Length: 371
Ligand code: NAD
Image 1 (cartoon, helix red, strand yellow):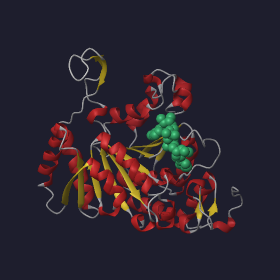
Image 2 (image 1 turned 90 degrees about the horizontal axis):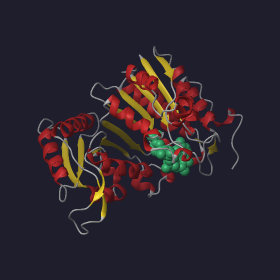
Image 3 (image 1 turned 135 degrees about the vertical axis):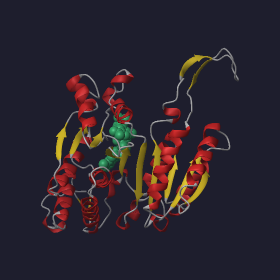
Image 4 (image 1 turned 30 degrees about the horizontal axis):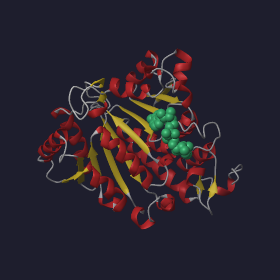
């Protein structure tokens, strides 16, 4: 088995180093190879997704990705910006299904912006279609309006579209995921206004006929946005299009306290996947050694489960994360009084220790960050 390690920019390099440390102590037969991506690749090779990095990602069974981006690249032409590397990888690897679990660990309920009783025990899975919808639909562009409210004025336009196979395959992914969980799928659409999402709703309903053991509900996206903050525990699996999924998965992220805790997986039809934390490269804290590595470490666990067929190793990592939280160790983003603030590296070391059964507990950690 081969894993492509693409740390990227900003905190990407810091958090991926911790996840690699955890993967190494599992003593499993896989090979890891590192390549630059994003701004780092632009600096090294003049392109955010060089041919060699893409070839490595394609040849690997899975990709562990950190994050890309920095404000200093904002003035580059679009095709050279670091974020283009993610879009390129999604497209080239055909990663159409994005899994974003939102789990609220009991120790972190206070870190959520919602009341603890609303989020305690929260465990939902948002499945976002990743390669279609208005983000990729053609035509798009700027032109002079020939009709509408202001004929003759400059206007911009995008195209929202979904084909039957695109909807069918993401619906199957959602129903199959629900079978391994609490057997409920909420399909989020805007069928009351958009033709594309009336079609989405119809096709999801048709696919559902093959999954009579799974409950299906349909919900408009505006209501889903409300229900996610009103009664999030009512959801099990949420499936939706690219744009609605983009927004709702970030909303769900906040229910859990910190985006630094949230892993994600993007899979293609062959279960080859790209695994990355849900957050970006956080240039505001890069280089300070304070980023939370747990989202990346949990992404590595998802990778072991979904692409590398190592569910026991994945469970060991998940239990280790639970254990370090129970020990009271916290990076700055999830810190609260009475817990112990640790650095990125110390958090990684603690997970390694928990995975190998040598729990360090707070007391043996030598260096902690003050404040
Ligand atoms: P961001 O997710 O990088 O940061 C948002 C906030 O969350 C910041 O305050 C940051 O310090 C904090 N944060 C993020 N991850 C954290 C962690 N692990 N531990 C502690 N705190 C953490 O989003 P942004 O600031 O909007 O974007 C920064 C750059 O990242 C931009 O260039 C953007 O394009 C890029 N980006 C990349 C990805 C990706 O690589 N998949 C995703 C989103 C944004």
